[in-house]
Image (cartoon, rainbow over all chains, first blue to last red):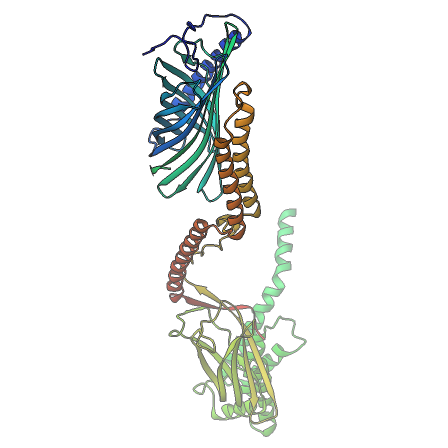
Length: 250
Length: 351
């Protein structure tokens, strides 16, 4: 689906497919990916072991609205676009220790200056979590994101490994959430793999009976290796609000 | 041979008391036979030997009473006031030792009975027979207590527990033997608690200025099927806390502030400086929500620390315990309704 070879965020359509540049960043990126693969394997084993034979099920479905802001610097200054994404999220709870999460959203990010392009965004994510203790969930997931502009479409994929601390406020109505992830297997069409990628978030979940609502701040950061004298930087931050229903076990 | 001699010596050392007991009984039997054969003088000689301090044989209290009784009876058969007075004296000696001693009218002559009656009128004693071990159904069954005054008297038969509660079983005029019934209940109709009781027989003579008291002890035991224990009181470990500790409010505040700090930290420290950092409006919204949530939660928890779910759960536990105990009490009450009293003489007997 790529309509251009160069990465989005740059007016310079002549930028070719980035070439492999050995060096410090690349080396770190390889180690990063190996660590991520090992972490993913370990988490997968933990997930398999955590599924109880007769686990009770619960489900949550929510609508999501997000104010998103995308920033990229491809060597010609920071291009910024922002807009609203709408989508849905779902969670499946298996027993008290396992969760599966799906997320899909889409929308349009409007460039904040004539220097940048407007772009359509679509994203999806799946994630499996295991609660090692009630307040800490370790997860592994996979996400896909697509940026579409007038002249090109760029597809991002990422493996995601991380943990989420859940700070339950006494009374059980509110839970604070702090999340951190490494993204070891990011691929970006038309671009070299980022040498460093991670995501973090903080938010609050409110529950009243079956109703659930939440507010979360997320930040994803991608640092690309030096290519042709340019170290590309991209960042997507968002403020997500969701409202939904939770039924079943938890 | 030596061993045989030792055994023989042992037997000889045991022999004298046995022989003494036996001899006193034989002497009394011989005296009674002589008395019945109207060989009164010979009978008197033997009976005087029995009661003599110089008697080489052991004489039991019962044997001594018997001897005094037959001495009185023998002398009452003889002519003369002196003999009669002596008869009365011996009868009194018998009565003083055992107020229950009596002459059967069909076996003794009117003169003897008259002398005995004279002795009873001059001697005053109150007495009570040891109670035989018996089982009583409270309220309906009865145990018989035999009390006596040697002549006309005001008699009071009173039962008292060691804790002081008791019941007057008889209070009135009496002359001679009186059988008093006890149904196992105390003054207010309540079941006599298990334990030791003192039975006092108090007599005040109507003929002479004398009073006498006899007492005995009874052990009362409740016989019923084994009772169930009620559940113990719920302790701190059995109940859930009904109030949050003060630290919970502070904890909530810190959690809210932690989320706020986390959002701001992500926006400032984890964002790319090359890209101008993160958008403070986005992180600020979560930081604000976290701070507000923390402060509101802190405030609410400080004002209302009760935990409704735990209060309800504790109320359920208390109700369940109370229901269980009510059942136990009901079953125990049914078992107690089947209580029988075992009444037995206590060690110490008659005083």
